[in-house]
Length: 219
Image (cartoon, rainbow, N blue to C red; front, top):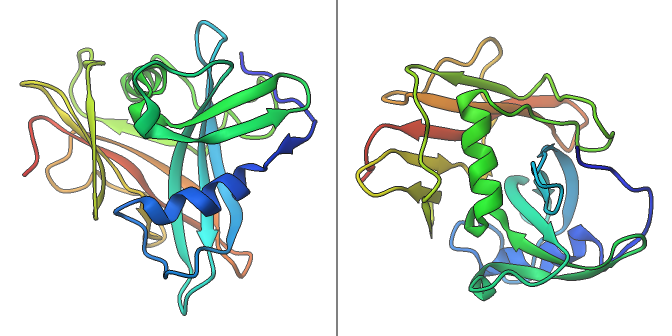
């Protein structure tokens, strides 16, 4: 179970993301940089209790139209070997000390727990309260069986694709779009998906697709 500490973090997560987001191919903002506000998200538990896993939703209001991003992050007590390209930054945690924050799509612990969430073996957790499930994060899946955990992450302008050799593709929507009111059916051609809510700049709530699973590579 992940423990949520009430303490200081320097720099803050939003400060780290303000510097990091413009380097991503799916970033929609301008050269001046984003103006970020936290809009939602959820957590997953690491069974070993070593790695913090958070899917944070942030909204950028720097441009003429607000843009909302999904950013899966992992927090580690030491650098992850071979993941220098995925490092978002380091921060000083008031309880845990120095933490290395990574783009979680490139962290095997987050990828394994995301697969467990889709399979129904893991439960989304509240972003701010320890040991409280987040019932608003909904998983839909057709079919059964275990998903691979040897996904390879590739970023492009449409988001992040997690592909496995001769296996399924998991597409993470980095730029979130509100869906119409009502139940969210599976996306066309999908065999699974994760949906969740976030807060819009005007204070209203939106809901949309976070991740979509396809059985086979997507071109």
